[in-house]
Amino acid sequence: MSTSYRCNPYQVEVINALVREGSIHHFNVSASAAGSTVIYTPSSGYAAKVLGWSFYCDADVICELRFSTSGNVIAALPSSGAHAMNLIGLTPPQGSTNETIEIYVSGAANVKGWICVKEV
Image (cartoon, rainbow, N blue to C red; front, side, top):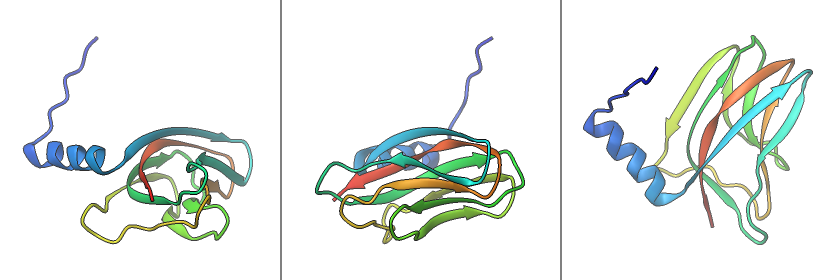
């Protein structure tokens, strides 16, 4: 069965802006206990600037999208649900040189989504 999705012109422009500015990286994390999983590693000598994201957590646990070394949180969910943001035109969060981006969960959970990253 095929499903057709429709986007309004604003949604199409947002998606085009994200793709023009950065690259989209999909992730699927399945955690059986509390912990962190790296979902993006910048090229050597570069820092990751997070321009947008969309992710979903299926369990009532704390879920954080964050920089690994500093622990600076980019986005968080206090329980199950979804979170999405577009930061094109704003000052997006940027990690340190070579700092990875991870998903942290405080218990067993499945987290799926994408991030849009520009290496600087």
